[in-house]
Image (cartoon, rainbow, N blue to C red; front, side, top):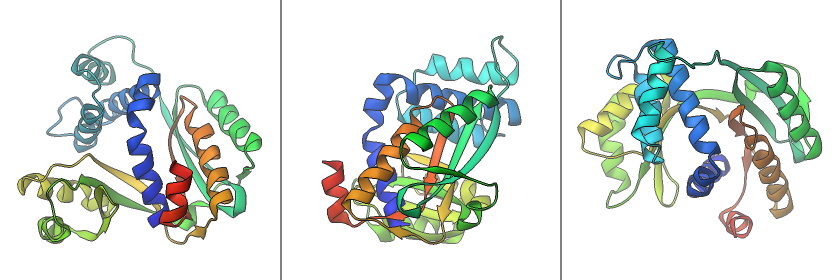
Length: 250
């Protein structure tokens, strides 16, 4: 999953630019509202909401926006929307498999946005189930390195169900079963280790290796998909070398 992880790290660096456009803030707020509606407004009793709030705070979403989203979701404040999660499946250039996770209050708009982005950028839609089998749902925690060694992180999370710790350059990535995500995140907190995000993601079981041209094409497609307000996450099964990643990033 190295290529996908590198892309996640690149997106993390782009977060400030995304925030300036307002799109990232809006998506983080939507996540909070939905988590509050599903599990209640109590952060201690709703780990999904807790993680959504922590992620928003890491991206400097104002506390008043976070509080309002929690209240809207829990029905304590007017203005909440009825969002539904929809997963679209497809293929990008070079046969890269894509899972496109939408959170929307307008199913037709979401479907149209995804289809247009795919068609204009060399992608194609796929039938439900034809792509999802290439991914497993996993817990993924991103830990900034700072002064940490890999062994420090490993020691903190091993007994909590972590399966592996990957070095992403500026961050460590802790992988676990999705059901162990809260235990892993809590173990890091208990060890005094800060983390940037903790969420359940779809991790590919096999990868398509891309050259520079292929990498540019898939990144362009992912950018187009994520430009939709309804698209929350895009998961893909590509892999690229460090050298190509640096060229494409530049």
